[in-house]
Length: 361
Image 1: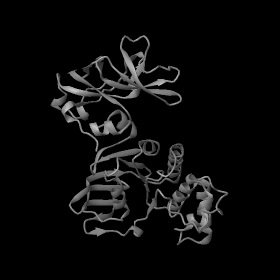
Image 2: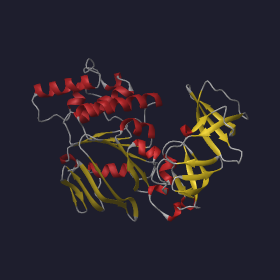
Image 3: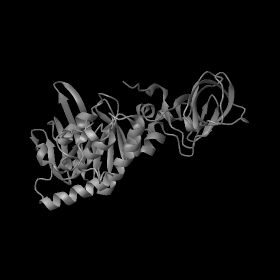
Image 4: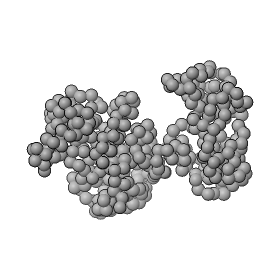
């Protein structure tokens, strides 16, 4: 039995459908993420799971127990779900220890003290329980908010854009810390974010949302290397597309030459006539697929470059006019307008029918 199960969930505001037939399952102890652009329905979906909004169709179950269906909804306070918000929502007049203990109403004083002390140690603030929220940094306050949500040992933790108020470096570091804390507590959790770096750092599995629907539910690795459609390919990671012609199930010809795929070619990983020999397709090329090689006969012009410390991200123009991105060691410092040698190294080719292009909103 799955820990959390959504079955064809639908939510509408008037005649506008915000969530359109979403289904997925999360196993106990797993961290999942709803990732997508603004307006895709991910926060509405989280609110439905929390019980803040009734649903128009489908069902929500936790540990087999029915939480929501049209006309029937378990109140939020009875769902044993912890919430972590982007604005922390800590009580300014309470100490850190008292904030964490706020939801521990049924425990004895000794049980509360033990649970709070354990969580303070877990979040790395074991000697700061007597401080007040304003005396802590933003990252520390967010860890306290997480500890408060964890304190009553809920069935599920929901995190709504929890790091959006923090700077980029702190966001990435804290997302790893929060994942470790959730795993240490054995907690099942769902994160909502528009930031794929946060999603990749925290989640075991990710649902890419667009237009109120899940476009792909998968591991971070598969979303990057095996996107199910053009929207996912565009939204996750960086990359470019080269037009080409399929030769057979393992070979496709592009401007740079003929590429071989270790796995049989399938447009959107679904056997289709659009992937037959002679079909025109767009081949996904990630920056790490474009290897700098001074000895290569294939040359590309440097159009732009972005210094990233250990690497440059180069925007390159091929002789035929197509553009690619390439990650190159920063020891190779090339000027704009310079011609550099490259080669493509793509093990498993991902391609999409030219006519199937889906533009993001």
